[in-house]
Image (cartoon, rainbow, N blue to C red; front, side, top):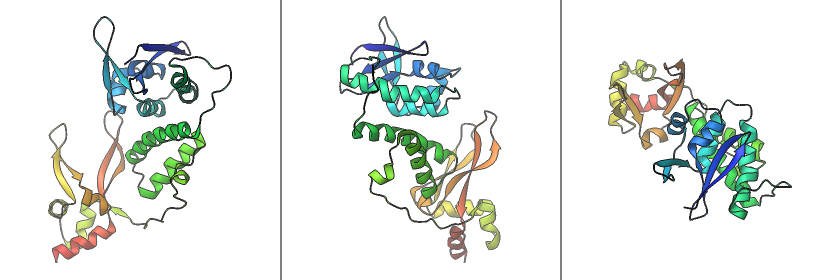
Amino acid sequence: MTQLIPFEFDAATVRVIQGDDGEALFVGHDIATALGYAKPENAIARHCRRQTTTPKQGGGYHTVIRESDVYRLIVRSKLPSAERFEAWVFEEVLPAIRKHGRYEAPAVPVRQDKTTDIARASAIASALDGAARAFGFDDNMRLLSVNQAVQKRTGVDLLAELGATHLLSPINERYMTVTELGTPCGMSGRAVNLLLRDLGYQWQDKDGRGKTIWRLTDAGRAAGGRMLDTGKKHGDGTPVQQLKWPESVAEVLREEAA
């Protein structure tokens, strides 16, 4: 890796490293601080997926993050300047680093080619897709919502770039808890959970407090199982989610229980 390249955004110093392969890696603490996170390390651990480290001069290590994780921090920032920070990073800093190997404030806006536009749009889509899943958006709704948000920010229609001129309309089904699924069959929620396990739709796990939780398998996801918000929140403010199933799964249960 080459040396740290410092630059400033609204008096906040942000350092970037250009890797041996030309990829720009950002010092995570600098990004999180510039975006107003009170606990930068916690924000990086919670929101960034591909962290790595690089040695500091004088000892120790910097945690560095990639472009997609920079955007994950941007979309979760509450600062009014976050959108301006995003434009500055993706439209000025990155193109300048790739061209000159350092940051140079451009006298005129840097024109990006189509490949750069799509790369930026893809990084944004990756971050928003995770957020859409967390909010319970599913299938077509998630794809369309993410694409619309990306197009609004970047002008790039990713679905059109991929040749997806339309999406099939999803079947509108009501999602049900295991208790609701089991009622017509005279089964308890626990019995339904065990049957769904035996069908290969889910598997049993423990959370950090040792409480039993159920997790989806690929087969369960294909059958329509989804983690959806309950409208409640944990003590830390994160939404409480519950595994629910479409009505079509009730028919599978009735056949198995017969």
